[in-house]
Length: 316
Image 1 (cartoon, one colour):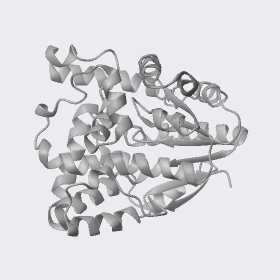
Image 2 (cartoon, one colour; image 1 turned 30 degrees about the horizontal axis):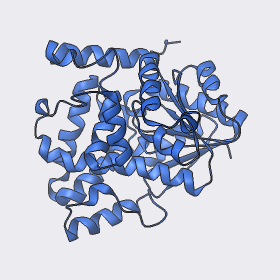
Image 3 (cartoon, helix red, strand yellow; image 1 turned 90 degrees about the vertical axis):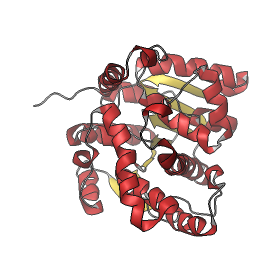
């Protein structure tokens, strides 16, 4: 059997490629942590999410993302702000609307979700590789009050390692909502299956669900592109946006994505799990990144908010 590349080492390789391409001046800005661990935080801060700005300040980083190295940055900016804020907010809304008191986020990077959840009385565990876990816990301690920091932590867990995943989940009591924002598109289908098997094991022990937009990331970014630039220019903007992350990770997302939603469902069900697609938002929800959009763009955004982008995965 072909041996899987552990997710934590995949992240290290991503970092190595990034540093090789970017040169010493970039390398000096970052510890041995995957560059992608900072990217979502950057876009959430740009979108205007308050806890993201607070968390970003706690990192002490002058640059979370080197925008000068990104071709057509200002074209891609509004699309990425919408995409990252929507997937972040949609999961937060689902967790709260369904009464979950425990959240485990896989490969969370430096997500501000830990701040958000702890301040809403919800136990948060970020499952990450060692370097991110060490720094992440330091950042949480800078931002949270003593009683809040008891509810949020990073735990070392490779998503393809069942024992580590279970140990992280065991930090919580009761049903767990497992979340993921931007991992599956970096993994082979074999690795994706391994991650799903480990998630299933956690759900069998703890109960709960797994919810993510990762399997629809291509359609999601395309949808955000259409909101800002309309049908005519959306595909080109999507390609430019995907290229940024493909170059960082030396990946071809089209090879990692499934061709149809039906293929995705069959793949997930083959792992012994149940799956259904649900809308991003059940109720009306205003985004920080909506500011500045015109009437037509807001109409298109309302349609995207109702799109069945989220994948809700359960045992039954």
